[in-house]
Amino acid sequence: MNDVYARYDAAVTALAGLDPLLAFVLRSKDLLGILPGLSATIATADEQAAAMLPQIGDFLMSKAIPALDKAALLLAWRHSTVTWIRTRRKINEKLDLAELTALLKSLKPAATVGGAAAG
Image (cartoon, rainbow, N blue to C red):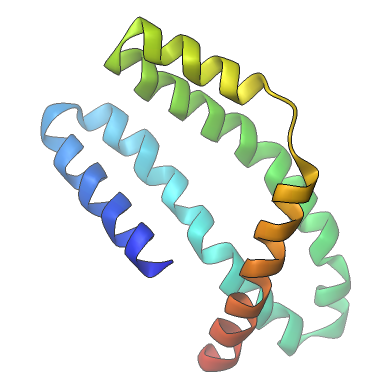
């Protein structure tokens, strides 16, 4: 997973020379990568805070998903109209809950390891 973040970082850094505003928008979404480790750290440090994590996560996702969608559409528009149309269709597709559940389960052990290493 670190390789994905490194490649994303390199791509956004390269983009900054061509389109600083778009790079800024994409870089601001980079903060989402710290959430799993932060959640694990909070969960191990404070039981009351851990009990609130699902509500906090729901709130953050309700704000993050539209922002990420907007950034993806902006980037797609800069590429081409066809890419924008395909991206918009993909964003509007129904979410595959089985796929999302599998992704979240795969991230949970990594977050736990990251939280244990940070503590």
